[in-house]
Length: 239
Image (cartoon, rainbow, N blue to C red; front, side, top):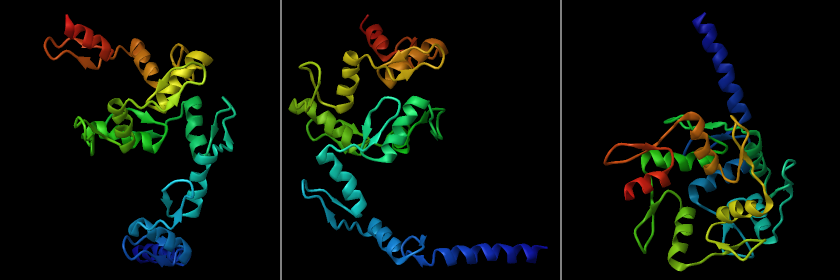
């Protein structure tokens, strides 16, 4: 029986080799064609032969360049059927749709939080392991991502490139402008699963949910009194 099982397993290995006969010499990943192998090879070599004609960015694949070009043309061909918001890629649309459905397929392996995208999970993991490789050259503050560092640096430069479409207010981060504009539009896309109350931001929803769970994650270092919101802890510390 053991010999028969081994022979059977060999048929799977043979089929896999037959379907993917081209193997990467660096990481041993296998591909069905030499073209796929060549594209994969650029992840090791860093080669990016497709350059954008509008900016200085380059890409490993022409498909990546085409998606990037939509930024310059403000093209958003993928539309959410719930809120009509447009997106440049089908993947971005799929991730956005989870904000409506509540689906969070990416769980943290350290705590019980879940996320709508793998990139959000990756950023969250930095809070557990303290990985902040991006440092501000002005004040030394460190961040988990380059984009967060760039937003932070606008505190020093005063740059606010994102203007509200309804009033004169401007913002250093696009996400801040989006949240602000919901004050004008009345949009509240984040709903509490307990009482159905809507909120303009995910963080506001999480804060509200603590009124149901009783969670108080912010503790005073002096008297150990816990609080549900960081702002309440700061107020307490001033007393």
